[in-house]
Length: 381
Image 1: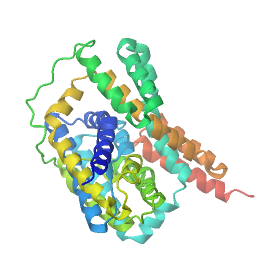
Image 2: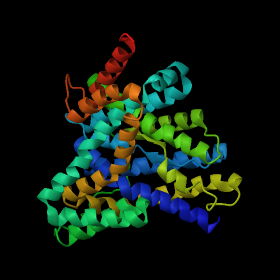
Image 3: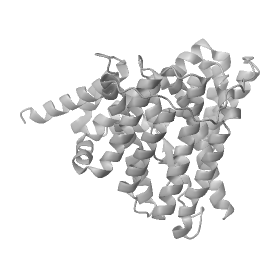
Image 4: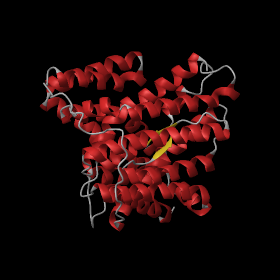
């Protein structure tokens, strides 16, 4: 196994883990997961990604790199009035919808018929509050937050992919020195998988499950397939959706939210510097899987340390991690003049955080955008 392949897989996994683990923990906290359920969530999603990456790479002989749904985690973290059992029901529902998209062509066509601007407007509305929170915490906790922002900006000048990971490391140092955070407790077995009983609440399935499915498809799977095509590989679309959907539904029983195709981190594993023979690059998926298994087993050290940090630091690291996807979502939302107004309606309603009938803002934002888009098509020309 070439050293370059091991290095690429290691960097991709560490960037993916370090840049958004704080957001996953924030999602777990938002739905009231206890320490054991949070531990199970993190371990389960690491193992899910490992199994899927190894299976698809070895099966299709294509370097498939999977990730957890970052915008999905943001969506979960922004939810209110949802407990862990209802959330797990929504995770299972979203996973099954992803798998069904591979098998049922009308469903595939219906998802593809949603305008890109509207889908991106919903994603941007979900992400905006997290990035706005960075400024609020900077004003209220300047001593803790401003050094994190400085580290992020300085590292971003040299190596953008490592900027959030550097901010996370800086946050840990600040938490246990300046903030005086207590040393993390190791009482919980952070590598055990705990069954979480699902509840299928119709309002939560609509308000969380459907938006989770849509943001995972539109902002993660589709770009992931595009990255493979850009590097000369034919993406195994049907197989990837089937595998990730089934794995997502299964590991949801242990608390994990959805997994999907990676995009940015996948690009690290696809270049000529990974292996000179492009037909051998699929093996990077096996190394990547091994790294994720290791990360899943390393929870006793990593996860308690992050949870011991002040919540302001966790929120700032998560907000900084979501700046790039927020930029991408805003650009995509307002790129086409024909859908700008519908995208703006979707963005405004989603970002408002409004909830009605127990259904969250992401669903109402999507509904508002689709109604406006339909009316724009019906107006006289």
